[in-house]
Image (tube, rainbow, N blue to C red; front, side, top):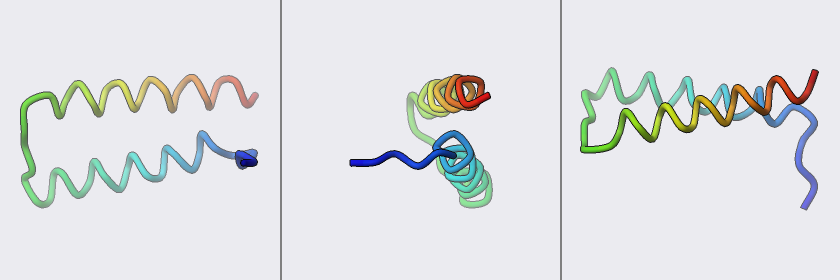
Length: 51
């Protein structure tokens, strides 16, 4: 499986959409903040590694 060159940007777009949906639909469950934070850290690392 070939990963796209801009995987960090793709994941960032997905993260922004999910974050927006969580806010608009008022979704909430235990651990949601931790999951979003871990996802953001992974995306940040991928963006830094692409430079």
